[in-house]
Length: 51
Image (cartoon, rainbow, N blue to C red; front, side, top):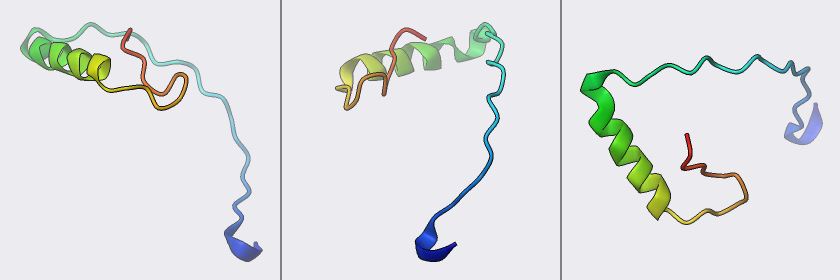
């Protein structure tokens, strides 16, 4: 279409299953949670530290 307008059909996907973090990656999970708590939210729901 003209002027870069994109048109498409969209389908809602089912949510991903919750999977526990493997032991060797727990430190990464902890570090990411700390970062997400420190970063100011720019929009409502942009970052959710309660994952």
